[in-house]
Length: 85
Image (cartoon, rainbow, N blue to C red):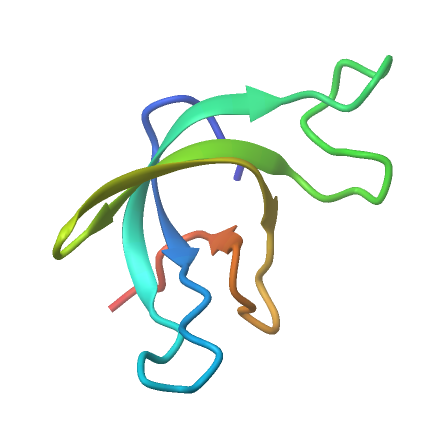
């Protein structure tokens, strides 16, 4: 799948260093897709798709730019396509 503006994805929150809050998947909307330098593709130099997101949290929204795509190990600060349920 290709990321595009307006698509719904999951953003993985970082959680807190002390573990009070764990890393969680949050709903997010793609607000921009970043092409790699000079290539015009949707991937950066490492083949990772980077997007800007409007992240929807239970307590409010925040905006994040340059989020890496991750399908495997869902680490904080990355996005992935929602799992099929």
